[in-house]
Amino acid sequence: MQWQKPGSLGEQARLNIFQMSDHTSLPAWREQPLDRRVFLRVSAASAASVALIAAGCTSETTPPVTPDPYQLVLPAGDTGLYYYAYILSIAQTTLYQKVVDSPPADLTTAERAVFVDLRDHAVVHRELFRYFIDNTRANELFPTDFVFNLATFTLTSRAGVLAAAQQVADLVAAAYPAMLPLFATATAQRNIALKISSVLARHAAAVRDMLTPGSFASSDVVDSTGLLITKTPTEVTAALASYFAPYVISVANLAIPA
Amino acid sequence: MKLISVLDHLAATPTTAAPRRALLAQLGRAAVAALPLGMGTALPAAAGTLDTSYDATLQLLLLERLQVALYTQGLAATGLVPTAQRTDFQRILSHQTQHVALLLQALQDAGAIVPTQPSFDFTGRHNVSTNPVLFPNVLTNFDDFLALAQQIEDLSARLYNVHALNLVYDKPLTQSVLRILSVEAQHAAHIRSLRKGRGATVQYWPSEEDAVIARSAAAQVLTTAATGDENNITQYISPGVAIPFDDFLRIGYGTAIHDPALPESFDEPANTATAQAALNLFI
Image (cartoon, rainbow over all chains, first blue to last red; front, side, top):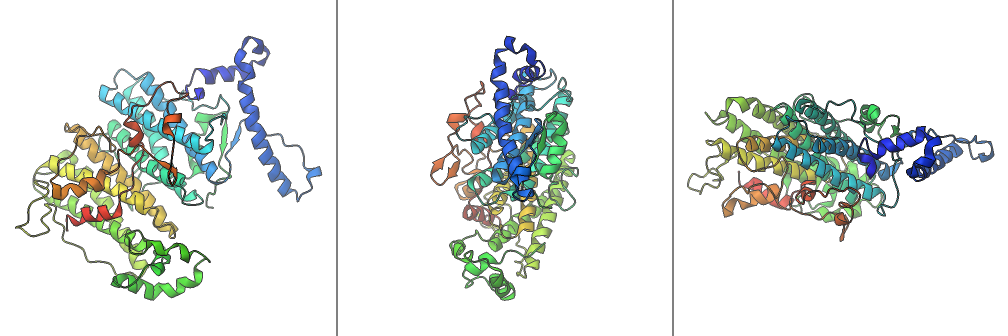
């Protein structure tokens, strides 16, 4: 799980991709692209099977599939939802961890403690969804340079940190109520995601109240009928796109209502 | 808003509740034809509990009406809510009023008879002046008001948490309930933040680090309904099979999370019978 730490192994892996001629001096090179290859083999296989069906079973005429190495296609079914929730928790843990590691000077002690809690909860959620996806934990789920990039946030001031946190916490809180009905059946995983949904709403209110006291549940996040304004997986991944670039997350396989 | 699911009403025994009979009379026969094969056999277990769509909606309506009454009475009590916090409570009251309207509409669309509005008494005396006061000073002391509001908002998040699962046959209502759940959780976090700002030892989420809100034995059921099982450190992947958090929370990360964070990471669903007993304290 090293890739959640921006600036360390994520950077290293990216460096490796663009400086492959130097690989003899970078012992990590052999391992890290392997993760990518394993992942791509899976996604290429599913892309090929889709093409096969579309071509009416004339497999001989199907052109070779050349997948975009930066295209992350979430699988269909509940597993795709686990991946989706996992990615949301990567965004949270990356940001909250950064704040815990390098808090701005004007962030109070009490507020730093809240960020430790936010980080801890998000780590629990992240590792839980990772377990749902792969309970052996033997596989890398994403390429090692798949990271939530914090560069556009201003994390050197309390106001900047809280604004970034509100942006992420609001987005995640808006994602869950739209995600929960997409589960195929009432599984334990779905019920646990529901329990998480309510905690993430608390996170959003906590961060909002820290940045602007009394801004919990205000009219930019709750509509005029008293319901939280939600965001579909398509809207959420669009909002996250620039932070995960160059990777492109596709939620086309999720059971999103038309 | 579509009609409340009639499927579980068909399975439940319509011998006691007049509203349920009315619902069945109007909708039951039409819905039988639409029942997928085999679905009916899975439902009778729900009979006699509070875990049917109809009962769920009624219980949520009672909860929302109670919250409307709490904030209406709180805002009307002279000198109770400080000026700086009045807009907060007006916003919360406005949301709860909207939730009541939504649930009333769902019941009316289903042809159900809507129960009359109870007369809420937040002292816990059930509108009988000689009964003992279970919740002292809630409309005169802001800290006591906040403590009660926190427990009711926590209960609210947890009750929506359980009922969101009981409305599965009515997708629009399920979607609304999931969105209300998030709003209630934001209310709960805000009440907690107000208490935190006034020196109470409390987090934005139920935590074993929270100072216990003292209640008399007769009022203890509210605490159980609001935060019971919140220190639960076990989640199940399937019946009897616990998720091995210990196996994966401390590897590959370097920093162990602090122990209370694990149960804090999940809001537990309320027990519906306990929740009803808690709501009944105020009517």
